[in-house]
Length: 240
Image: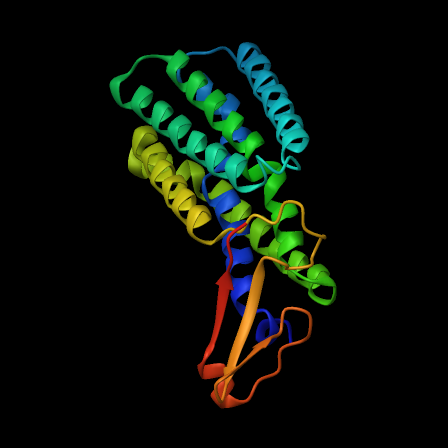
């Protein structure tokens, strides 16, 4: 029922949860000490830098949580800005590895990346997913999204060192930067902004079924369609 009733939202939501981790978030944090040690930083100093990165992430997460309910800001703007900053941070680290500027460039790249993540993907992924689904579907959709998110994190973290040994450090970070750029495009194209709307109301997402020339709005009721109706089913994201 979940797949049939809210298929477009489910596809968008799961892809969004996928992008939150496919950009390498957990892998970069988990292996930050190892990465900096490869650039000549001592283990103790690398640990302190990693702690600082965690505090920066916390600060930007608090900032994002404080501003997303303002109608003039909403969810999309911090998400798009944050995901763009993630891509810039990954590019910065990649260039640093490529030209051999030392550890400073990598540290700056990681800092920029985690600022963007704290502003965008970090706090907004689960908030936006919760707003995309009405009551009967929210818990199931978020559960599936969590599974996709954690599995993606596991695969990326598991393959991180393999990627660095195969593509090199610069190649790995450029690959992650390209994926992050794809995430920006996806978020711009598909993620709605429901700021000011009742949680889960889907007020800005009209699900229309055209049946014999008559338009039915099914946003507030389960969707069960005939074969002909399914052929003409589409999702419309109205302007916020």
